[in-house]
Length: 161
Image 1 (tube, rainbow, N blue to C red):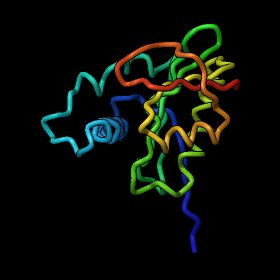
Image 2: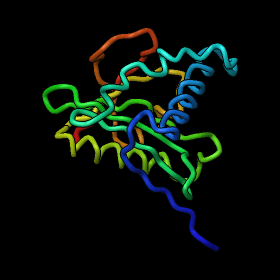
Image 3: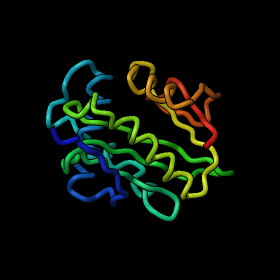
C-alpha cells in the first residue's frame, strides 16, 4: 500500500488554492462562531482578505499544505517586532484531518518564522476552537498575556522558537 504524503510550500495568498483554503478557513471559524454553516452571501470578502499583505516576504509567509497533491491545509506567519512572529490562519480541511497534517503544518510554520528571523511565536484564538487550542498546547505553546485585542480573541499563546 502506498504511503500518503504531505508537502508544504510558501505561496502567494492570491493563488487559486490559497484563496480557496482561506475562504474555507473563514467559513469554518465564522460558522463555528455563529453555530451554523454560513450562506454564500454571508462571506465578507473584506474579512477574508484582511491583513493579507502582511503574509508575504520580506516580513511574512503563507504556506499551503497538499496531501497527495490536493490543497488541504494552510497557515501564515507575520513578523511582528523584537524577534516575534504571529501565527495566523492555521487550517486543515475537514476531509484531511486525522492524517498528520496539522502537526506537520505547525512544524513548517515554525520553520518559516525562524527563516524570517523570529525567535518567538505568538498567536491568538477563541475558546471555542478547542482542536486548535489542543494543537498549540501539544506543540509547546503556553498561555501568555494579551499582546493585541479584537472581537474574536479570547486567549493568547506563545512559544520560544
